Every structure is written in C-alpha cells, then in structure tokens.
Amino acid sequence: MLYGILAATTALLLSAVLAALLRVPATRARILDRRRRTRPVPLLGGLAVVIAVASVTWGCDWTGVAPLGDDVGGLLVAGSAVAALGLVADVWRLKTRFLVFGTAVAAACVVPYGEIGVPGGLLAAAWIAFVAAAFKGLDHADGLAGTVGVITAFGVGACAAMEVMDGLAVLLSVLAAALTGFLMHNWHPARIALGACGSLFTGFVLASAAVLTRSGHDLGSSAGVLFALTAVASADAVLVLLSRRLAGRALARGGPDHLAHRLRRLGLTPQGAVVLLAIGAFSGVLVGVFVHNGWVAESAVIWVVGGAAVVVLGLLKVSVYGVRRAVSTQVRTQLRVRNG
Image (tube, rainbow, N blue to C red; front, top):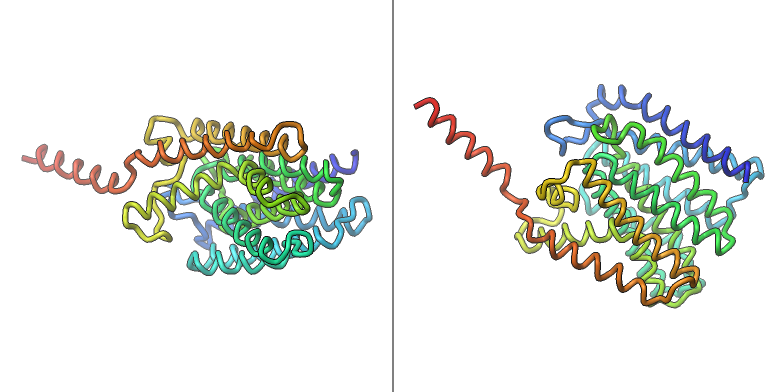
C-alpha cells in the first residue's frame, strides 16, 4: 500500500514538473493545438504523462516493488509505441487514418486471443482503436480528456484489483496520478494540452486494460461493461460521426461538434461543461464497476446506454456548423451600416 502511494505521488509530481518544463520548447518549436484559434496551446503535455507513467511503472517492475507481468509489460510497450505515433502526428500532422491504423495494429498485439478467441480479439482491437481515437477527440476542451481519463483509470483499476491483476492496477493508478499532475496545467485556461501523443496513449491504455479485465467473461456482458467504463468518450465519438455524416462533411474534417462544444452553445461555461461531462463519466464508470464485480444486475448498463443515446440525439439538434461564418457575416454587415 505504501509503495503504491509513493509510486502515484512520484508520477503526479514528475508529470506536473515535466508539463511545466515542456511548455517553452513546445511553444518555440510551434508544436501547438491550432484548433483553439484565439490562444494556440502547446501540445507536449502528453509527452510528460507518457514519460511519467513509463518511468515510474518500469521502475516499480525493475526494483521488484510491483512486478508488471508479461501482459502488462507488453501493454505498456504497445502504448508507448502508440504515444510515439501520436507525437509524430503532433509535430508533422499525420492524417487520422494513419493514427487509427497504427493504433489498431498495436491493439491487435495486446488483446488476449487465448481467452476471447480470434474473432473476439479482432473486435476488441477495433474497440481499443475506437476508444483511443475518442480520447483524442476529447482533448479539444481544457481539462476534459485528463479528467475523464482519471475517472476511467480509477474505475478500470478497481476492476483490475478485484481480478487480482496487481500489475495492471499499479499501471492504472500511476496513469491516474500522472494525468492529475498534468491537469494542474490543463484546467481552463489551459497552458498545455495532451496532444495526440498523450490522448491516444491514455485511451489506448485504458481500453486495453478494460479488455484484459473482462477476458474470460461472455461477450455480451463485456460489451456493456466496456461501454459503461468509457461512456463519455464513446458517446462523444458517436455524436461527432453522426453529426458529420448527416451534414455531409468528411469524417476526418474537424469542427466545433463535440459534446463540450454543444454544451457551451447551450450556455455552459468551459468549466461547467467539463464538470457536467465528468459527472456523466463517473456515473458510467460506477455502473461498469458494479456490474463487473457482480454488485448489480448486468441489465444496469442499459441505463448507461439509454442515457448516452438520449444525450447524443438531444445534442445532435444543436446547430454547430456554419456558426462562425454567420457571425462574421453579421459583423461585416454591421460595420457597413456604421460606415454608411
């Protein structure tokens, strides 16, 4: 217990310090999130999280304090490879399809085929890639990806602890601590962001860990639990995909069409939107943990799925495309009137 607290504290402090140190070189090298047009934010916060998680976790394994085991060690190696791919995307702007393909290949290397079979393993790999991409989408809002990541890490870590997967529980506790340290610099107004490096790494590790904890359970109940554990990220991705498809936009084309964007259109502050989505993430994770441990009936996940569907369909009606153009046109018209 004492070693776990020490490891988490070390990861938190290391991530916070590295995030502060990496702000300056990221700004000077113009490694910025340009989606935030009014204030471009440096993107190397994810690198701080990855370094903190990898160094502390491998340190625990090397000293024998908390041995990871082959499965968890392989997961961390694959996650680091995904983070490296994301770092390349942050620096050179790789296309989304390359990120998804690379993440899917890494996921295919960590799923437990022996316990869930080849078809189940391929489905799991696709789901891991989906969740990783969904977490990348959450990084558009200050504090959102990190907050949802911390909540999910605690939930999946609780499931791993109940399955006596000590190495996996250590990895997830260290990830939660590292994300907490990063959030010291990412809460609104953010001074640094996760970028593709950190968001893909976070989503990949969380989704892969959730799959490992559910190996040995039947596919139907596992699908419900996995969705509940990642409800906010999954709902956000589904909302974006539906919205862009219905609007005839390219799926890879960005836009102000995520959950947080739409909540802000409804009048919430940036902090308020994140808090509301964090409550939603906590509710889904709580149901997922309870169902996984057999404390409530498996049918409880239906409430999470239904709630997510209602939110997605409701927010789908919020107009988000063409707003900037309409606003700029209105401003130009007013200027013409004033100038006679």
